[in-house]
Amino acid sequence: MLAENLVEEFEMKEDEPWYDHRDLQQDLQLAAELGKTLVDRNTELEDSLQQMYTTNQEQLQEIEYGSQIHLRLCQRS
Image (tube, rainbow, N blue to C red):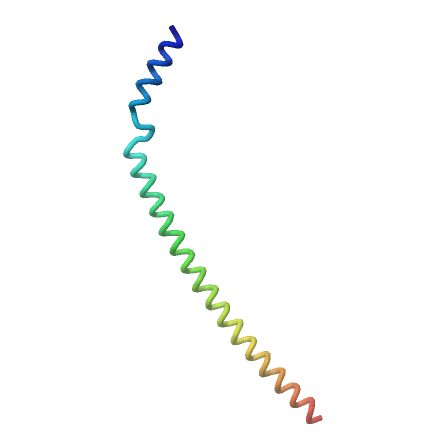
């Protein structure tokens, strides 16, 4: 008796979709928003990294120039 009820219940649920269309739509909307947020954040990080790289290159040039001046001054002495 119990087994028959379980089989009938399973057969009824088998015909129904495993998802609710509204839940699926909401999940897709959230996934799209999350994807956009991740792309935006990635762009911000890339811009920040590029700025750090540029600053690093400028500082490296300043150090190299300072080292050359220091070397020339030491050679004069």
